[in-house]
Length: 101
Length: 101
Image (cartoon, rainbow over all chains, first blue to last red):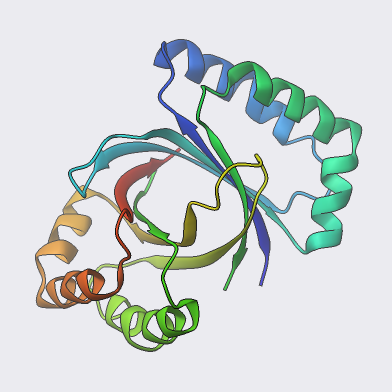
């Protein structure tokens, strides 16, 4: 079992500008976070349930355990990433911790 | 780039019964789907944004490309899985297709 931080970004006003910041600035900050085992970024394409296209992107950050996640969040690199998240996350974006089975 | 099916299950009335069905019946059906490259299941633990604990579980099913996903959805095993999904997914559960960067 690993722990992951799951971020669900809602639709940005300007998707191209969002992607430029996200891929060019935000993810490079993420990759500096100590103890990060793996990242996965994806872009939602279709709401298969016929509902609203609520989310634009998902980021998953994998950590070995709670201690590693806590240390990452408490690090200067984690703080810089959180600050940048505040700059780019559209209103209604969600952030969860999930445990992989 | 791979394609994934992302399922976000909302909170079930009876989490223990949900898990029993999900892990004991639903995921075994999923694993029979042809062309499935990888699955990841996770359980949400904390809403870090301080918001509602909207989702209970997430399932991610990875496929090589659109053709593989289409074939999987059109297969008898895909149909059996979709039927079982209708049995267990709490109201408001979401299903998306996402492209991994």
